[in-house]
Image 1 (spheres, rainbow, N blue to C red):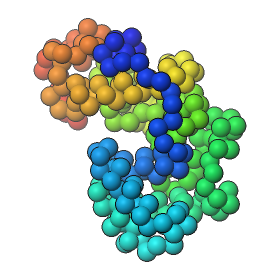
Image 2 (tube, rainbow, N blue to C red):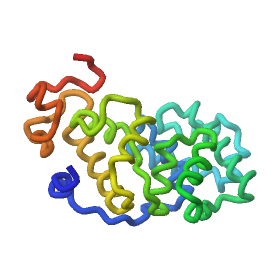
Image 3 (tube, one colour):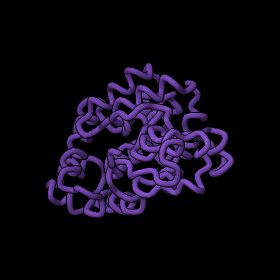
Length: 221
């Protein structure tokens, strides 16, 4: 899968795309939200001021700032609670201590924050600190389940299951994550996947069963 996806979507270099706090808050904003709307929501959030100012702002003001993100009314208090917890524990917003913690401890510290799940924590650790973890978003989960790498399970369990199968090699994990995500967006979509043009179809369990009539991911057939 790694080789076929690389041939289709290209090699990816593990270089941080944004600062750790930007990655953390943007990933919270990204849930059920397009990348474009996520970035707009983040930029409007930062118009409120620094992280301290965002903590102190009325929650409805924060929700309005991130209105381009889906479910802003629930994300706003989670973001404020996350920022508050980081400030209380670290005395500021520098996350670079995560680079030196054992991976399990770093994941636990992040997932103990309000509003931070395993996907968000894994993205921060892999993208910013090149730690050997594997983020599983909805696209990665869908593609690996359909192909048959893992049986059907929740995204939380899929993080653990996939990490056991993959080498502890951050550049490999980074490229595989991005290329699986791209494949899920372009080809192996939730409904009506484009199986005739899929580079993984010869190795795909769903294609072996259904051919070009693979059901939507939520459909039980």
